Figure 1 (tube, rainbow, N blue to C red):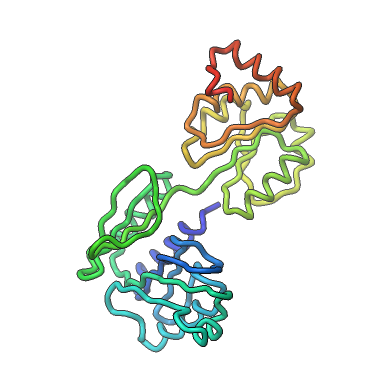
Figure 2: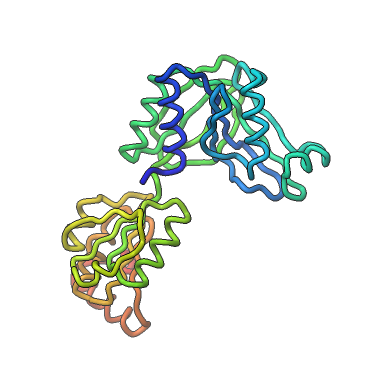
Length: 279
């Protein structure tokens, strides 16, 4: 499963390779109610085809119409929607809503390919565009930030897709998987018990073969990865937790009552995990 941003950029790359012209739009700032947050992206092809979103739909329609009529900016620039009440109503922007988007023509296959390849291997990239010259710079960074303009440069960030590794394919695991997919997480499932695995019904997940501790080591949890153990079997849950707590995962958790959680902490202490890691 690709992240929404990677899907947009991959489409843009294919369009450029096939000889089309396109524009990339990035939400810079919003005021009031806004359906898309800063950093959301949209690519519009010269014939009006588009992938991604920067609003609820009406702004996308306007940009597609501008593309078909060759009315989009020829250089990188800031566009603003919702300045007046009439405009907000025309573009169906929620009450009090207003947004700025950065529009830029994209035409370099090599530069876009470098960004796509970096995201495919889970790198966090800062993309900077000079609003006067159109020059683009790519830098691997940590941590990420919000889109901003500094002088003549517009900076935005592209990172790896958020991942959730679920240990256990029971009913709770399937509920977590469904919720995570709505939030654009890449969901990985580890379930060594075939009789439990046979009852799974959520599509679009990735099955990772092996015992929980081996699976955690295999996927190398990074700062965009969460690991949750829900098997209710201490032998399986603890195997995953022992490795996940040593990783860079931004969240590691397990299901259990207060009594069972305390017992789990006691078991973790036997394996030389410190109180900060266990907490």
